[in-house]
Image 1 (spheres, one colour):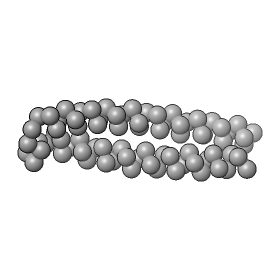
Image 2 (image 1 turned 60 degrees about the horizontal axis):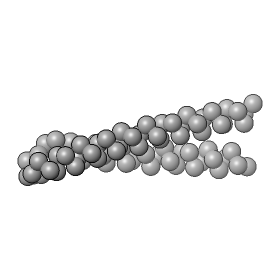
Image 3 (image 1 turned 30 degrees about the vertical axis):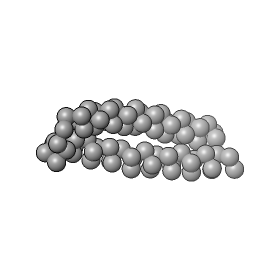
Length: 76
């Protein structure tokens, strides 16, 4: 039973990672568009997107660590 639960948890985290990576890609696209607008020092949209991108990178890294831990436990 624990094996099925572990597999379900792993699948859940992989889906979460996929969603985060899609959102991150969207943020990076919007960030690129903001860069194209010019002066970044006065571009609030760029600054907000840059902060969002940093937040998503951290969240993605955390989820990857959780997945690696679950995969490691699952393989034992």
